[in-house]
Image 1 (spheres, rainbow, N blue to C red):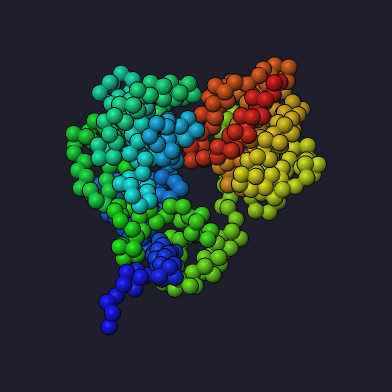
Image 2: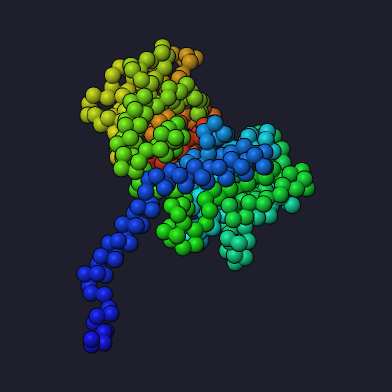
Length: 457
């Protein structure tokens, strides 16, 4: 028998294609919905254990933090973005102040903020840099005389000394941007009582000791990375997926964290092949219920925000209602009565874009209503949208600037001056301070800014 040649040993081209296809199939099967949900619940067990050990309340850093916290143990939500901590792009967001956390932190002497990151990173930038900057800036604003609390603390195993120094150089700028919002420093300081101190915990380094010396002088803000770091590929992890709750638009088929937790046992016991149909059914059932009705919440003098209720919208006497409908409708059909405007702008980014076109009519309609009221009559404007957290907040900001001056008094058309970014930012700060769990999208706020800044230009 002749000896094997090189051509006999090397796999033919067709075999290489087959190997590539097989490896791709293995990777996709490992990143299955079942493995993601199992990984999320496994990580949630670690988070629950950390909360028990540290005796601190759990805060989900949205969007993905809620996948790792049982809703019965969730004390609230935060909105710290990793993009605000990316190298060279460090920022202190005046749009996401997260001041709603201060009262809880003050009452419970700290909190645990939960987030995750995908394969390859130890912890997300939101936990390693965005939150430390937030703590440092708030300490400088609320405890100006306590210079010992002004230092920036970052995890040394995730942030280099060089990067830390570059962030420190930006801190005065970040502090100025916060103080420019004219926040109530005394009230916030009273809520908190003492400065903040970020600390870190991961599955690879879970042994955090909250020494009395730390908790006596600071409120610990524990940054918890819920997922275990995967060094190689998921194929070597027996189905475990790091950051399983990330990028849900690519795998979840509309499933959300609340729906997952409500039906976790059913979902995890269903074969992978049957999951798409089950998820579709659960999502449809949840959507049919609609958003939970919410009481109108005051965000500024005379201005309130709420969700659109199921059924017919009622308009109380002396009240103007602007409902931003998720269905797109013709502009000529919006005005239902002298006190009720139903603006059909659609959903998502399309709605944010169409809001820019709708704002002139919204502001003119509300302004006309308010000016027709008798002097001394109660003025009440309610702005509604599907979530009560995005479009309605943007429209309320536009109305706050357009119809009312800095003191909350009705602004006469003849006294309306061109708007400035600083004035808009200050009023946005007032709204976010009054309703801290809202998170208006960048597209919505850009539409508001565009409308106000373009006026008279």
